[in-house]
Image (cartoon, rainbow, N blue to C red; front, side, top):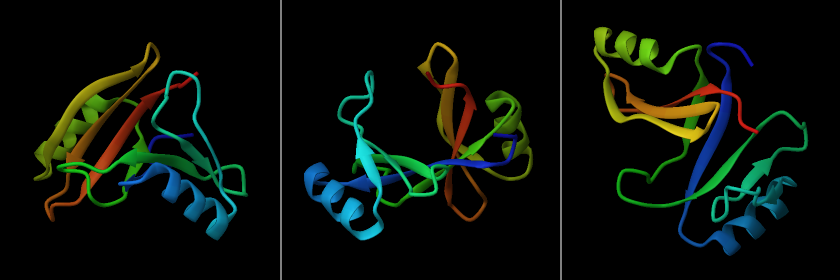
Amino acid sequence: MAHGDITHIDIPVGDMQRATGFYSTLFGWQIAEMPGFEGYPMWQAPNGISGGGLAPRGDGFTQPRSYVEVDSIDDTIAAAKAAGGSVAMERSPITDTSAWAVIVDPDGNHIGLFEGVVG
């Protein structure tokens, strides 16, 4: 993926089993936990490209969140702040080769940032 591509969509859920059944039946998504990501089942759309995760619903995470691939989380956070945005969650590692963060646009929308390679 390239800088600016939507790479992942997280859906907040309160009941993982119910959500897994709902989305797999409704859309034909393949949903499974990956090693190292227990409790966070990943979904894959039939096109083999679109995907994301079913994440536990919690304070500050009540609506689906799209993640955008970026070349540099630090540079993107700086640019977002300069353009009137803010940071909801600072850079945090996912694996040794990847990280994520969450920015907030001037309208209050939370946008996830992804940098690196998972796996």
